[in-house]
Structures are given as structure tokens and as C-alpha cells.
Amino acid sequence: MASDDRAMTRRSGGGPDGVAIIDKATGWTSHDVVAKARGLLGTRKVGHSGTLDPDATGVLVLGVGRATRLLRFLQLLPKSYEAEIVLGVETSTLDASGTVTATHRMEGVSPEDVDAAAATLRGDIAQVPPMVSALKVGGRRLHELAREGVEVEREARAVHVSRFDLLPTADPLVFKATVECSSGTYVRSLAADLGHALGGGAHLRSLRRSAVGPFTLVDARPLEQVELLPLPEAMRGFGSVTVDAELAARVAVGAVLGPRELFVDGPPPWAVLDELGSLLAVYEPHRDGVRTKPAVVIPPL
Image (cartoon, rainbow, N blue to C red; front, side, top):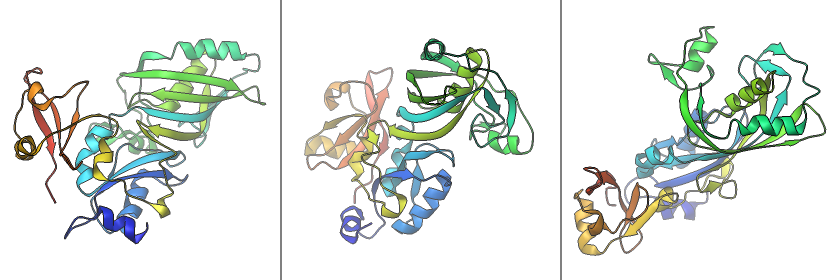
């Protein structure tokens, strides 16, 4: 990261602030990326907005400094992925990193069959989280239990898949997949469920996250070239409102306001900016929408 870029985002007397869009390389865990970014940026205050598997690549959003307080909102953003799905082979991890658990003769499956099966997995669906996930059950992450050979019952969760398109490749058992989905959707589970819907099995390979909400690969940089976008950019994917100096003073102390006082519109949460474009707070509905209150107030520099 260039020294002039760092100066633009570093707080007076403190560490840097902002959001970094990383193009994660394969072989790195999300925790590895955070740890390395802490060293590169010279601050412990770094977190990420949603885990990417070590074998996956693509967009990983980091919050730095005061932006770590905004990660709870960024975790809600929808995700987009590009991947390949291999028909005929099931694995222990539902992706190419696992051991083969079953094989199926699926050479006769046509692209039309695949699209029809994918159609059943679009929209609002119930999805069972895989054992190789970071979800906690009984205080322990599922992937930790899976490494110990323990499998526990998981409740299906409601997710939304707005796009699940598949294109054939030169290999009749391999399809390129484009997925756009809600936060909390497991693409490896989509692959496995597609295989089952076709009367056999399947697994995922070469997963690449192409977007987290409005943050795309165009914004992303390799970790070694990490750059910080200004703090207000963290809320790019949400509605915002600019307030005058008088109202900004009330927002800064966490005032509960009526929606008309704040002039908010559209779905929450709402980023509140001052007239200079600085992020003051993030507001949410309060008292069934009769009022609004800050979920986060950003301390001034």
C-alpha cells in the first residue's frame, strides 16, 4: 500500500480507517488474510465480513479501524460466485478437497436436465449447512467436529438463490456455474443438491467469489497491494442520507429520531453522513418503525 494512500486514511494519532477489498488467493484462510493485513496496515483492528474457504478465491471485504464496527452490516450483503460443478462424484467435503464417498453413472445427463434441476434450487429454499463450515453448533464450529469424524444434526436454514445458471463444458460431466445468493448460502451444498436432484451426486470445484454486494473483482486487489477505501465506502451497499450541522450534532450523540426528521427512505439500515461526506452513524428502525435509532455511532476523529 502506497504511503500517500495510507496517510489519507490514517486517523490523527491512531491507526488507519477504511474498507479493503481483497482478491483472496487460494490456500489462504480468511483468518490468514486478516492476520497478514494487520501487519501490512500496522493495526490490530482488522476483521472480515464473510468467510471464504481456503481453496476458494475472490472478493473478501475487510473492515479496518472504525470500519470494523460496520462489518455486521456488510455480512448481510448478497454474494456472487463463479464455479465448476462436477457430476457423478460425491466427496466428504462436498468439494474437490475431500475424499470420494460415492460415484454415479451420469454420462446421460443433458444440459436441459441440469437446467431443470437447477430451477428447483432457485428462489427461496431450505438448505442444510455442510459439516465443513464455520457455523457453530453447541459452541463448536462444524468443520472442527468434521475433522474429528463427528457428524451432528443440522437444521435447514432459509436462504435465497436469485441466480443459479449452468453452462456445459467440453467435459459432459462438468458444468460452469454462476450463482447469486443471499448471505449464508453454501455453494458447495447447491452443487451437492443439484447432483441429488439429477438422481446421482456432484461436488464443487474452483470456487471464485466475484462480488459481495456492490464490491466486485474490479475493486479487489491482491493482499500484498492492499488499499483502503474511505470509511463511508463501507456502506456503499446501503441507503444513505446527508444531514446539516444541527442534525449532525444530534446524530453524533446517538439521538433517537423520527424517520421524517432523518429524511430516510428505502430499506434499512441507513448510513448518515455530514455535509463534508464523513460517516457519522448507521441508523435502524426503532419502535416498529415509528422512530429510528443508531445501531452504530462512529466516533469523530
